[in-house]
Image (cartoon, rainbow, N blue to C red; front, side, top):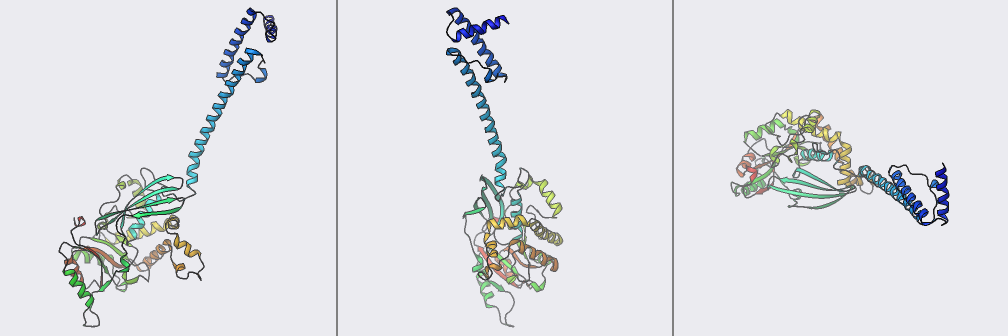
Length: 422
């Protein structure tokens, strides 16, 4: 205790400059020891309270202040680092929450599963028989609620691939140009009755069509529709018999009656067959087999991997068609979100006053059309309204003479042979 009290007295005299050189050197050596001790305690997170830190003048004061400054710098660094971790963690957790504020086409996607949007679009394209066949969707997220979507389509008649790129930003779509030529066959599309008109009077329009077809080269490809009367109740078994009897290899689609008001034997909903497109999907089906098996248990024959054949059991094809409708309707909430994002006109029209837009206001949503198609099939069965095929001029002429074909329509023709023949 005496040594401690003597040192305190010595420090007091050192403070007022009343020490000789030897005493000064001794005190400063002890202060250096104290500084080393302070650093050791600081590294051990056992810092003394600032209230217990002696207040020295001169060189001793600078030393103590340096110790305190290092203490607060280190604590400031630790605090800043913790805040940075919190911000990074908050961004990592907050980004998915912010994404949920907008439509997310990647939801449900993993290395071994399609996203909910991809599956819905693939199945929707399979049941919608108009337009090109969707082979693949590539989705890239570019920011919060922002995505770049690339749709790869295939036109079997022209053996032509098309790409449509869509930029989706926070629930709004900016469409980019589609490669290839966009055609509108409905504006020029004509149908021809294969029956005699007005008794024995021939159908001159049909005779003119035969004359045009006869001038096509043998290697030409014609894309044609065969239209069937709804009251004749043409079935999938009837179509199978017709196709096999004529040895036709390239049946693309059949349209299924979806309401009482299908116009001119045409239907939006139906079945695409394997010759509707070039390949067997996007190649990911092999990686996603577990997901596909689970879906096919709940919806039999839903995902066929491009193997839909007309010579399959007609009951299996009917189940396949119903499975597509059931899947889309069971995911009607997703379907509504998709339509609101990609086709908002329908919902905007329905929200208007009927007096202002009496015609537009009658537009049906996609879900309403699907539900109507399912109800019609449940009540009437699967009734075929049309069949779309690729045929040679010779095969087309033979179909015109078949009594089972009441009406035909030519969609287009290619003058040269195509790989779709292989």
